[in-house]
Image 1 (cartoon, rainbow, N blue to C red):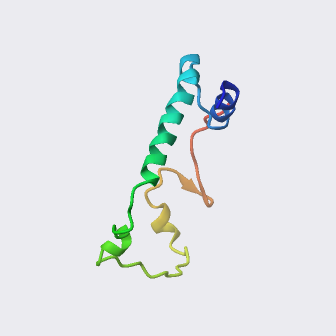
Image 2: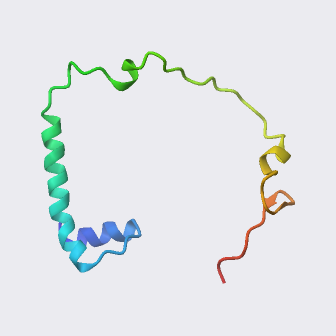
Image 3: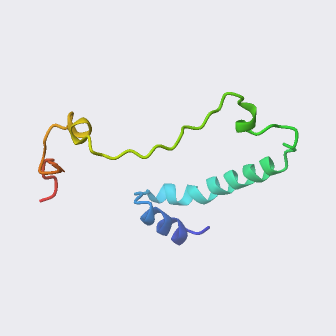
Length: 92
């Protein structure tokens, strides 16, 4: 991975990287990927999956509920009116 790719990813992620960080990232990514490759080599065939291990796992029932209780949903809002939450203007 080169600096151009690092800068593009940082831009997409809205990260502000120093020049030092841009130079360190490829090495760190390589270390992470090498570690992942080591983990792939482990034999996990005898290890039960997390969900299978837990005998008390229950899924919640899907219940359709109308949002007719607007007061209950907005009761703690500091400023609510006309169907909207009012907030301070933050952009000039």
